[in-house]
Length: 260
Image (tube, rainbow, N blue to C red; front, side, top):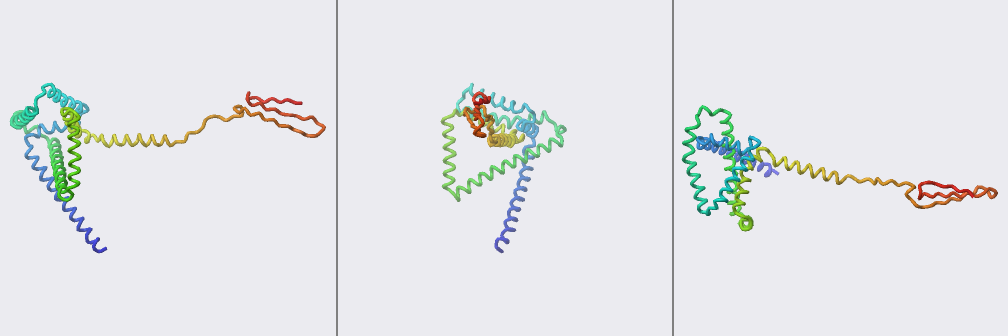
């Protein structure tokens, strides 16, 4: 018991130290991103607002832009090497020319405190995303060292599935769907649509189960007129009196009495 109680504060302090180190790293990385992306902040904020669906029509804008780009690629039908070189060339031109255009168009006076707060949150999300990717890579390397068989099985299954999908489905269609999903994920998370859809599905399922468990009552009336059984009763009071026989014919829904 003493060993367990002595180990618990050590583990808690180690976890607190790790969390504090991660928070410090996150803050440092956020400041670095704010300084390195300072020129691009006038473009990153509108792009972030578009990806997070600030307006109701933003998903349709994203869908239209991505669809137009892939339709153009489909119509041009360039070879893979030509397509890759054109994409790299576009990124190089953007990296060189866009900062010059930004300096000419935008001024420092237009930058407000609200925009600066949004820019800081954006840099924090980028730094957090980088940490998640780093942790994922570290966990993969740790699995490769400690459990190589599991690492081999997961890698083989995942890569085989991707190869099968690439063989069976058109690669341009897969690229289009992947790009569209990646661009729509920030807005889905910002609008919290996944928990909403999950709640709607669970409510529908619970209502369906509750209605199926309600007992069904038999509403068919059981009256004496539905039976076709004839009953006869003989009444005898005294030997001197006459005998009365009662006939009940229930098939017609009425009773008839005949005296003898």
